[in-house]
Length: 421
Image (tube, rainbow, N blue to C red; front, side, top):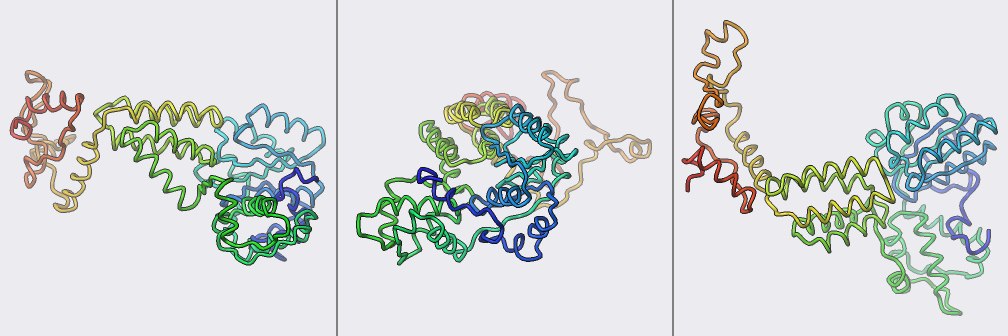
């Protein structure tokens, strides 16, 4: 490899003995070491945070077992690409197919793998940062063994850097002396690939004759070059919080900005869309009922389309939600109702509201006195629907917007005692 290849790729280990971390899987007598020693490959899904060795382990398995190796990214690959690899594997007799971010494959894309995995045409190795129980179809999951990869420790990360210094000629010539580690480790977020990329950037930026790495030097260099987004850490929650609050605050500009930050950081688009479905009901509600319909359609479309095109669908939904009238009245109503339930316990259902499917229940007055609303003028009759102990309670207060103002007028006609002020 030449120096145009990223450092993380140049020093990627090819044998299990050089792999750092995941001792519960790769140590002597552990499952992956045994699998390689036996010469029998099995389909696997690696589940763990970014940069902990999922891709490297897939390549080591294929290399150690002398298998043709194909790699696809679920971000920019589809059924056509999968079928092409399967055809190549069939011609060569067998191959290992590694799919990065397999959780981003939709059902049709995952279905396209089933036959080849079942027949042994390909050994599938998938990598995911999301729980495969939710993101991988059960038929495919049942054909794979799931292995959980753990976050790398500080000792692992330092060992990776020292290993890179020994293996890479360019880095070895730099003679870096790491006096401080805190900034480098913090900025890497536990991601080995990001850590090695940082080391390469910093080494390349050092003035002639300088080889000592301090926290100040790391901060100075990185501050100018990288906008970090750790989708499994604190920033993940900070940015989704800023995103939601921007939509709630009716600022489409800020909302689209935070959306772009998540997209560029590799956030799962279904996670973003799922949060918008919740927001559409919690923060917009009946002020614009179409918001929930659009958000739900957005989630379905994102699941169907995937990256990169689904960014357009997400943006449309974000702008619509941010530009909609806001109301949390429904959210407040269910919160108040749940609080009332916790305070009053299991109150009996009033007799006139109970179901009476049997003669005995009718004799016990189940359903007696119930008035069928459609038999009355305006399809409404004034009767109590709450238990006696909390009769007359008001839990829903319409929001201050045009749509709920119309709702308030209707409720005022029906329930003057509650909404007649």
